[in-house]
Image (cartoon, rainbow, N blue to C red; front, side):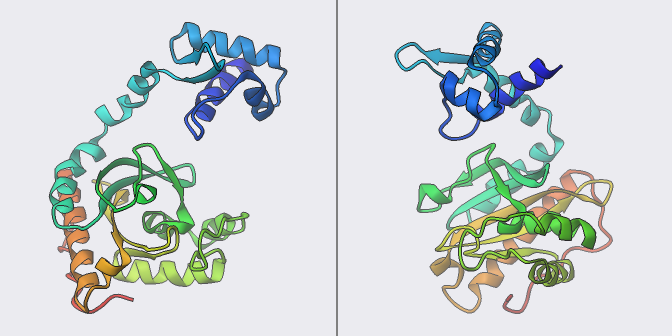
Length: 262
C-alpha cells in the first residue's frame, strides 16, 4: 500500500511546477532512497503514466495521465451544467471566466475561458488556489461552520498582497457579508491589478456544487459607478442558469444588485 501511495504522490509532484523532476529531486520530496524512487518511476513508466527525457533524465506526466484525469470532466454533471452558461458569460466580460470546485481545502478550476490581459491571471484547468485568497474560495468557506473556518485560518496562510485576508476575525466578517448578499468579491487579494466576482451554483441538494467567477482588470471593473454592479449581475445570472441546469429549483430568482457593491 505504501508503494502505491508513493506512486500516486509522484504523479502529484509532476502535476505541479516545474512539471518535471529527476530522481534526486523526487527522492528529496518523498523522503525516500533514490533506489526506491527509481523503482516507483519504473513502475509508472511501464504503466505509461510518466515518461522521461533521455537527455535530461527528468520525468514528466504522459498523455495517458491527462486521459485519466480528464475522465473527471467527461463524467461531471457540474461541468456540463455550467459549460454553455460560461460560454455566454465570457462574451460580456473583459477578462476570464472560471468554474471552480472545492477540493481538500483548495479551489480547483475545472474550466477556464477568456483573455485576462496577462498570462499570470489565467487559471489553467486543474490549477488549485487557496480558499482565503480567492472569491470562489470564500464561497466555500461561507458554507463552513465558524470552527471549521477558524481551523482553516489558523494555518500559516500566504499573504499574496497587502489586501489578502489572513486573520479569522476579518474573514468571519467577510463571510457574513457574502452569506447576506449571495456572492463574493476579491479585490486584488490574489493578483495585483485584478478583481474577481464569484457566485455559487447549486445542485438538487441545495448545497453549493461549484462557483462561477469572472476575473476582470481593476480599471474595467471600476470603470464607472455601474460597472461593478453590472458584472456582479452577469455572474449571478450565469450561476442561476447553471443551477437550473443541474436540477436546482430555487423558490425565487437571485435579486439583481441594484446598488454598488463594496
